[in-house]
Image (tube, helix red, strand yellow):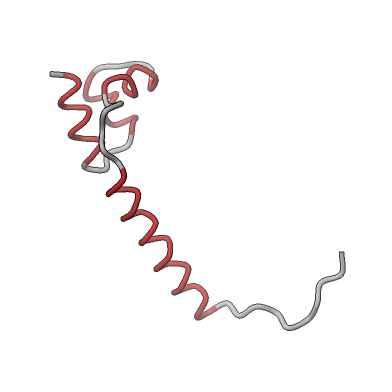
Length: 71
């Protein structure tokens, strides 16, 4: 039961500490044991897409300097 709950919650994007608290675990290493079979590739793709979107948004406001930097 713990494996299923931990895996489901991790795939849903919950952080390790919240899962540990729910399962009553003191250490994060034990929680990692419970969700080690979680399929996180799709969640990681979402995270990277969000990062790319935010980087593009920020690039509109922060322009690189045309001056060369001296080492």
